[in-house]
Length: 464
Image 1 (spheres, rainbow, N blue to C red):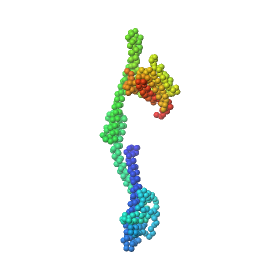
Image 2 (cartoon, one colour):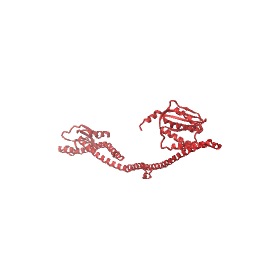
Image 3 (tube, one colour):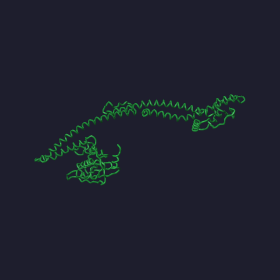
Image 4 (cartoon, rainbow, N blue to C red):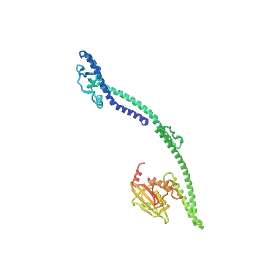
């Protein structure tokens, strides 16, 4: 709808605020108009009373008196001069006043209240108005006036103020509307149009906005949007190249793993060779082939589209951790594992993936030279934290800086650096995380965090 547009809202708000300002100005303006009305009546009454001074007898013809009173708009006029002389001009039976006003007293608040009282009253009260004469210092004039003409004048003044307010509001609103349309609305439409066009095909360089060169906030927004669009376009182009490269690497790894598997089968017979030199190098050859197969397997796992399938279930944590020791290594050099896990502690996670992460951490510690492992778990603040602690030599600085970056974070010569990257991906896919707590010469501590069963259940029931 039109009213929902920024231009229409600005137009309506401008009219509203101008009208509100006029209303705030209207009340004191009406009070001032009433004071001027009464002051003019006092001045006219003084002039009418001077006709008595021109008469030798101090009296004038009743017809002339009525004409003068009609000209003033009063029922009676009394002029009190500084010398004590009185000049009274009235009809045969002047009415009694209903209310009295002294123009020499009062303040702005009183004048406003009396103006509103006159404006919204009904009927025709007789007002006794006393005020200093503007024509003769020290003289005062007293008038008997009808209130109805004053009310009519006030409403007429209010109508003129309303018409003027509407004219000012419309003119101001139109000027503000045109100014904002030129300064803000049109540039914003250009920016949003560029964003929409860019969204349809981000890789098209021609859809990038061209900054107008303005030096204000709009110009800065255009420049920043242009930089953002160019950055996104380059990132998408790089991502497309990496995706193509990843597809090629995946195919190469698949074929290479098949070749290595064949080489592994052939090499198995070398260990039984009669030649001593062949038997001596066979284990090293088999280890090299196994490492190459493992690297191909980890690379294939990492290059999959999206996270691995996630099958959550609730299970006890202690039996899972107790399975790590026997599977860690079959040699006599397996370091002892101390398990500090409450027997009743359960988690909601993918059991196979969690086991894979824990086994990867334990195996990394063993291969790094750890002689002792400790796995402890605790539940607090809606999170189950599992610490894997070893007494190895710690991680080198380069490995700590790139710990979870694929192909960068390996601490072992020949390592791919994929193990921890995949482990963190598996943990985050389950709503948890994997972090390095500390790593010094005295050992290394990794922490796995998972939502507590109650929290995980609530998240699984939450509407998507």
